[in-house]
Length: 121
Image (cartoon, rainbow, N blue to C red; front, top):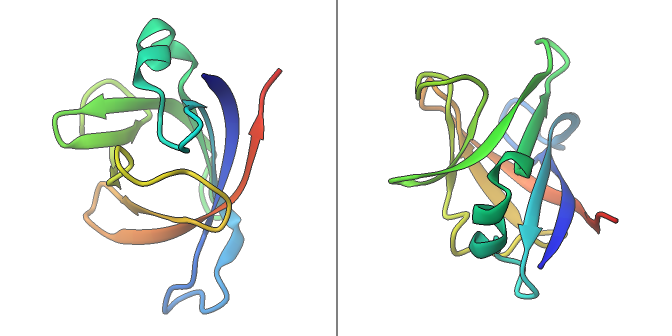
């Protein structure tokens, strides 16, 4: 089990045909060698699984990466109203160049590219 720092950057969308590095998430998660979340390690230290959302037109948001009945989500406050669901994070490896789909609270789905993964000391 290795705790890692992961950077997700907005991939190509109609609004941003070249993607946008300024619209990003920084995650802290334990990853197994296959690139999947190490759920056993996470269950021992769930408070360390964090997310920080950077968006130039909005204040930064900090929260937790949580397991939900529907998969995984980024949660910034208690309750589900602000949760951003992450499509198939339980079965897609998190590796540079891979893609992750985040569903915002309003239902809009956005693609993000895994820009970097680095092991934390």
